[in-house]
Length: 190
Image (cartoon, rainbow, N blue to C red; front, side, top):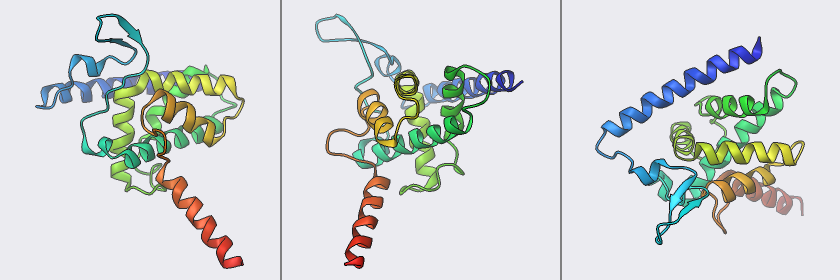
């Protein structure tokens, strides 16, 4: 019963994503064909190269490395919470990952991060729209490689390796805020 609900929900989300993509294409800042491809790219020599997209969406939120990293981190943490919650339910891990990805981009779920919930939703949906294949593949890999991946493992595999969100030297704002709080608490104890 749960898996048919999830399939229906997933199909509905895919349909909504398609409608959103069509409206984006009709807008003045329509993505180029090279931006739409997620797994296959052509290098300067004309050879086909497989891997995640190197281009970042044009929106200014994605140009801010700290915000882009925070958006990816928020998406990954919310997906992780949903997958942990749905662990015992029927269905394939791929169905769970797909459903969790599209369920995570919600103002109510993304309200505990440094950026405002509307900005987090914009980043979350942008990451899904631009890096969906790389994101879901890396999440499936993380959950098959590790029984319960840690936030650090997920952030590394998804936000550093699959999606170019948390580049070297950049960490999620929420992690920085948590570390700062812990340092303050330690300093107050002394």
